[in-house]
Length: 342
View: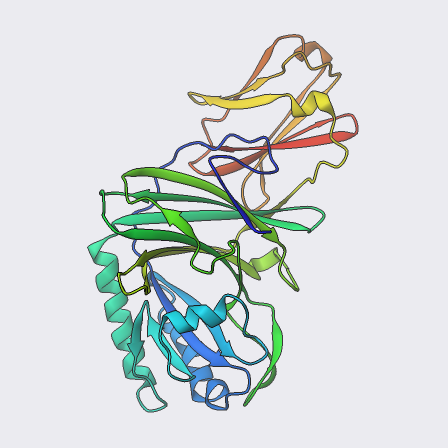
């Protein structure tokens, strides 16, 4: 069962703080494809490769969605149907069909770039950001997502959270066995379009979980977390309102050897200090490692027995920039991880 939990982390005893979500407006470019389709692996394959290079410096996110064939899945099928595709290959900028063929690919790509820039210059009515992490047993994939509406809006809005993979090798007509780039492979929610949002101002924070996708590889951007705010129109169509993508997925301890003492340590931010409330934990040594979302250790501090006599420990975190961090604590042979947002 896929789950979304509001204002809490399902596995970590973390503290999700408030942050300002980016007001950048992003556009989605979807290539609708099929593994058996000759043109999908011919001119459309080249067009998708070319546009990912020529538009890479713009506020754009690319999605390869297979409507039929061996790479169709429970998300890509309805995703394409929502765009009301007629055949494949087809290209869409957000929800707008791009009349592209082998002769017009270059000019249509240029026009798409101009539209993407225009939307980016106008700014966003709502922003979304997400970060992914997984347990070291590779069984679960998690996504922390923040949404903020900058103005109060009427209408129906939904938050969809998806996996995009860049390491799936599959036979493509016209190409043979090739890597399928930007492949839409799954959703964190039971409904492909996600969960309802309110159009009220203020930040909404969620944690999602799902089983790790097939051939899951977190390293080097092979798996990306795509977040989309959809606006549902009266006719039942879901249109892209804003989106974001993050290819930094961190591995954390699954805590199978959890010690009660460490689990009861509470962490919170106070000004520019990280406070560890020991809650009468009986510890001889405590190693504290602050790790960013790409797994890089930012700060590492060791407390000895004589440091652990007080009720609370304070660590200066003034140097940390705004973002998610994992507070990994180790004592003797156990480990416990909590999550904060600075």
